[in-house]
Image (cartoon, rainbow, N blue to C red):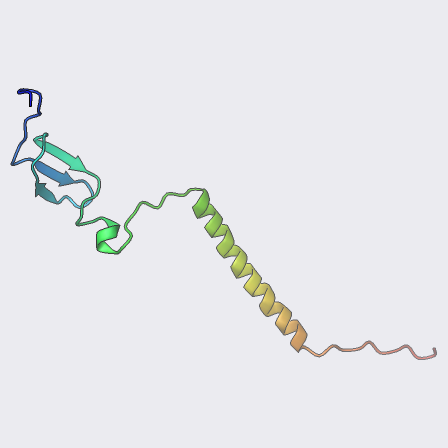
Length: 96
């Protein structure tokens, strides 16, 4: 192996998680570094979702779909009430 081509390793390098502010001492080529998520706060390891609520196309579609389902349920209830009411026949005119 050639000498002098490998980066210097820091055994006491500090890695800081931006999300939960947890600090780890992991050997690295950089003395200090930051990560967005770590094993302490990542949803795969924790089982809970703590992500950013970004309003995108999918979120807008889901909102519209929920409103549509709610409206359909309301219409169904109204139609059931109409069917349950007895239909009154109009009185026939006298003289015919």
